Length: 153
Image (spheres, rainbow, N blue to C red):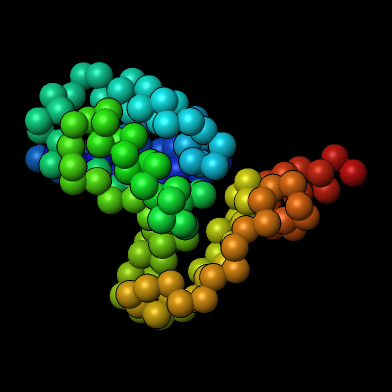
């Protein structure tokens, strides 16, 4: 069994995959480590895994907004390890997940348009060029916040 999380600033989609390939999806608040405390990450994880024997979880992959820096990756990683008592935890940026999902092992440009937006070039293995998100406040013209303001105008 493993857990895969796709987290933005607004929501997190958790896919819990059992040993038979069955997937249970759960949705929670967004867990951008720049906006939430370690305790919120732990409590959220404990809530979605309350019916799962922790010893059956082989690994957790968490891809999230705000997880581009090693400092923020470690914050999320430690919270997940503390919650599940599992050391096999991988945390990386949501842009990296988008690259894997869209391009797999091919090179190309990828973009995320959400609460915040960003753009990156992926060489098939790593992110080589990355335009960091300015956040949803500072004129991030592809973001949900900006598009909502335009709609209201």
